[in-house]
Image (cartoon, rainbow, N blue to C red; front, side, top):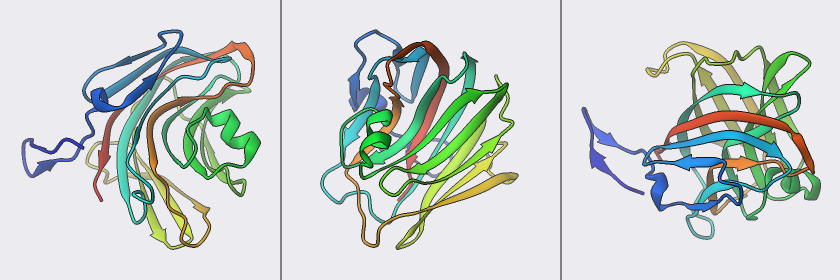
Length: 203
């Protein structure tokens, strides 16, 4: 994690240039604080992540922002995830892996935000997120067995749009932190473009 002085206080944004990028079809443009995903399909494994060490992600608070710019029906990507398995998000779902993700998919004319624990299948969703509109999120460990997502409409995080929670196993920790990840379900025609930006490890 890179910590530098930035305006007021300490900048806790992650330098994504230090992350591992898996991108066989060159769908993700990574700069210091941004992963720009363009036409990522459901037929490829593409990700940006870092291994923080066994048990490193325990009592945490992460922050970031996203904007979805284009999509086809059922296109889906993650802009945040924590996991103990380095894989695409479809594999996490199929295998009930120790992974929690925040993803976006377009279906039936709506863009959905999904907060999901793949290990137990617990998830919550929010519909009505519009293309081209930026959203800010905070995810933290609310208790030993609950992770919480809060969505905001501005960078100051004062206007709360929604809160979602998922249950996790008592004592569950994770080691991998993702700024971007795809769903590889063998469906090449289903694509989405999204910017994942300013990922922060606050605690």
